[in-house]
Structure formats: structure tokens, C-alpha cells
Image (tube, rainbow, N blue to C red; front, side, top):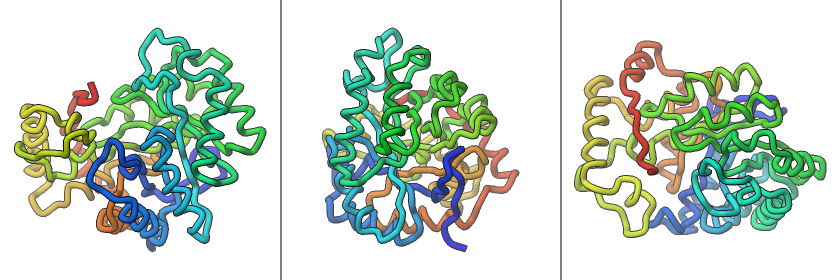
Length: 324
């Protein structure tokens, strides 16, 4: 069997249901890895059937894109690259009331796509996403014209947006326009909110869904304890800051383990949870080592979780936002 593939929305491409999240290999916000390790992990993923890599211009200021481009050019087969236009004002997530001119003016979106192509050293971007979004901009023509012109020129094949953290409803209006091919959203055992409105709408409109943060930045790896420390400046040091956040994670993870049974691999269940929803085209965990690549890609074969397990997991939804 090996890797399984799913259609990416209405595009004519089939992507591996386990994709490669390339934020961690950008360097700046995730510390402790090396470029050599990253390239080995990327190559191993490609050799195991991964054909979708999700990166962004903002990941290490283009460094992630450069590594991804190196791996893709050497792959010897078609690998699809998704990347993102960072907000011009460098504010994540988009703040309500911010004019689109401060974030995605037309010329800036075009220039960012061209910069990404130079970093990747590829002919085209398979999926270009806006790295933040608010539906307040949906009626504006800047993003529409930029997307249209980039597609017409052949520099970009398909387009989408990355929905605001823990707010999947922030992208429903742009999905209803029919002008995006894919949407990226946080979807995991703790944050099941996309199931209410976004995932059904994606199925109705035939829009691809990339499920990001499937392991909740590491909380669902099951390896975080109250005494876990991260390198100074590492993103996770901020995300899991203070004793209380780690304590909450441990309590929620322990409750999950009690329900699932101690012998169950939590990361495996977490990734299969995402794949169990038919709206999801690909789940994109960050993978910085060959070991993670090998364990994650092996799950593609196992398919959806049993209905009983899924109903157990429903009880573990956890409403909180550690990005704030």
C-alpha cells in the first residue's frame, strides 16, 4: 500500500495525505536542528512518497524555501510546493480593522511570490497562500487581481489562505467566493472547531484543506512535562510559557491517555484524527528528523480511526489559545 493520495480540492493534483510542514527547518523560530538534518529529513520524506511540502517566505526569511527548493529540484519526480505571502506589516494574525493596503497591496503580493520563486529556484508555485486572513477584506480587489494575474502568468498554479489561529470561521466568506483552491487551518484533537462550519463548506465548495498544527506545536506528541524546557528564543518557549500552560497540557494529555489506553501512540492517533475527516486533503506536521518522517509517513497506510475512537476524541476538545 504505502503512501495514500487525495485530491487537493478542485485542482487536478493529488497530494500525499501526509505532507511536510517546513516551518521548523527555517531555523529562526525553531532551534536545535541543522540544515544537513533538515535536508536528510526532506529527502527521506520524498523517498517515502511525500509529494507536498508546505513552506513560507517568513520561515527563516526565505531559508526554509531555499532548503525546500534544493530537495525538490533533486527529487527526480513531481513534488508540489505550497508557500505563503507574509503580511506586509509583519503582524500575525491579521488584526480587525487593518486596511488591506497595510497587509496585502497588489504589488507586494506579486513581489513576494517572485521572491519565493527566486528562493525556491522553481518555475512555478503550486499553491500560493496568504499567510494571514480576515474576511473583512473579501470584497477588495487587491488579492483577487494579484491571484488572477499570478495564475495567468503561470507563476502560480493554485491559491489559498491560511486561516487565523483557532478561528476557522475567519475564512468562510473567501471560501464562498469560489476564488480559492485551498485553505490551511489549525485542526487537531484539541481544536476541533473546523468541523462545525469550515470542513463541511470545503466539501460543498470542493476546496482543499491542509490541516496544520496536528500535534498542537508538540503538546500532542505526549512528550511535554511540567519541567520541560526549550532553548531561549525557540517558538515553543513562548507557546508553552509559564508553569501553568505545561501543567494544563499534562492534565489534558493524561486524560487522553486514560481514555485511549497507555499503549496507544498519541502522535499516531493525533495525525490519524486529522486524516479521518474526508474534507482534509493533507495533514502537514513539522518534521525535522528522519525518525519523525518515518513514523509519520507510516500512518498513511492505516487510514481513518475507528468510529469508537473518534467519538472518544470528541470529548477532548479544548478551547484555548496559547498563541495569544
